[in-house]
Length: 256
Image 1 (tube, one colour):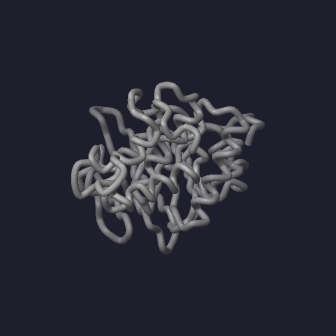
Image 2 (cartoon, helix red, strand yellow; image 1 turned 135 degrees about the vertical axis):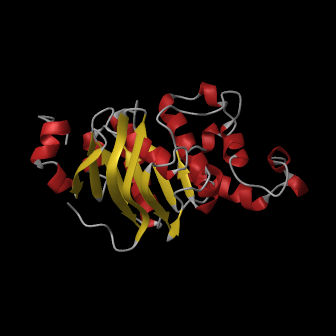
Image 3 (tube, one colour; image 1 turned 60 degrees about the vertical axis):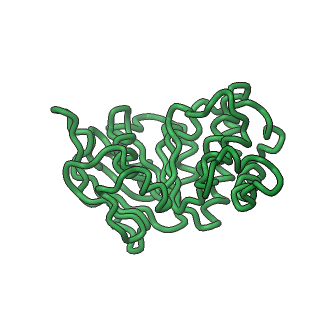
């Protein structure tokens, strides 16, 4: 397996997590280096989402350590991890149907006062928050959806709004849980280009995805989980031919 990155912004060392008699993670160690795109793949039930929940403080591990930006965050509450620079999206879209795209990008940010008041133009506006929201809106090509209610948006656009919302927090590490689920190939290719641009800006990205064509053409490194254990790690060129991975997950897939 690939060695732990020497300057990893995120490290998990020997992390284990059980729920009753089910061992969701078994002594898992992974690392994400600065400005790299790293994928976590594996069959359903392999422990991928539990891994994200441990990183973001939704679950505390039974054993092992999580380090972010050289600080131990294993027992930090979720809000503190977010403030330190970790943002995430979820497998199931979590937008507020009656809020506009612009409102999502504003209220997701930290403010010195009422976030609703900061949405107002003029002297009450938080100009830094507005600037971050405008940047995210432009970056993801969402300008024409600014005033659209979330519930009226196509599925692929809702996915982009979730990512734009996460980006407005100014994260150092972005966690994406199945970002292209439900997208067509053109939408997935467009998102791939956007994520590569974010990586080039210095953002580190850790993602879970089942679309192997997307993963193999995007990620710098891959970690493969099966029944909560890490069975392989390395660049896509190695993972796609790894016998253990072929047996546990990829099989005869030709998409990769």
